[in-house]
Length: 347
View 1: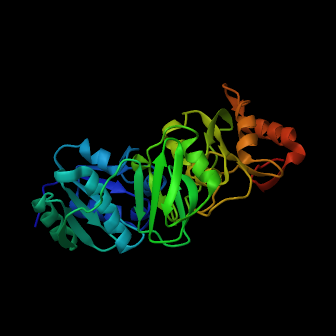
View 2: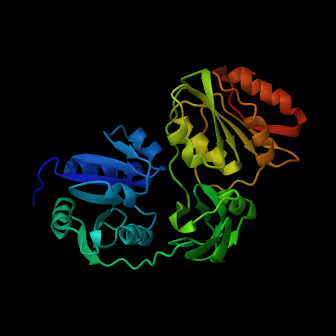
View 3: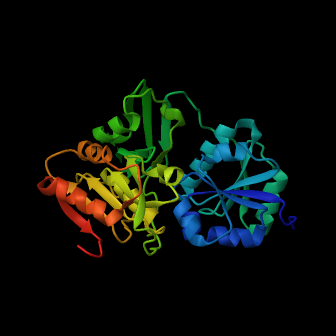
């Protein structure tokens, strides 16, 4: 069964589908007209693949809604169940528009909500995957969120911030005003819950929620590119790096343990060093990696939030020499911190 070359658009989600080589294989088999990487955390793996891709930092459902023609979603869940659950959620957001979902973890083409059956059949023929028709079952309620497919003990996060660890396969959260309340299945991490909303009205039903590691593979390291430029400040929202990073970025000030890990991972393959301000409450959600010139300092008797904001207020709005600036911060904080990672070439 053949599909015309350049006929279909493939929307890709998640880093694992790149790390396992699925995207390259699918592009060879299907020859899509466009390949669009949705979301945020797949981008590092996608860029490392060297494939011709487009990037839209929005959830897959929004990306698909904005496209015309024949479109399908390609994903590889951490398990076959989590892969199907993810498709269920995306299909629920698309409603009766339907969704064709190619799931690599189970080698299945799901045709959700009477989606394009012809396209699903063609994809099944090209890939050898099994074709299945399903109806989405997620009940989307305002200010309520179910995170399904969790493995008890793994980190759960909202908008890139760890809010606790799963105690069941389903975690239920509710938001009221600026308060996020765990209803079921979560051993909460109060500082994380507090940081997500930051005192603002917050609807958990529209937030980016996930459990488990953001990526299982380590990033490819790249030599440092700029020694002088602007410093980007990322405060407990590591997933914002791609959207905010300036062209002349010489380094990133990352505030918070998990944020430092995410920024280090993302920036290492771009050769951008990180100055991480941490206080030792990190959850392992991504393999640690830092570009040359990076320094991670642990605050001894204060909160990383407070010290990080103190440093952030004094980040120059003009280009600086990264190594000189980092040295100034180290001398300024002195005995208030201890250095736990130091990748400066000259000390």
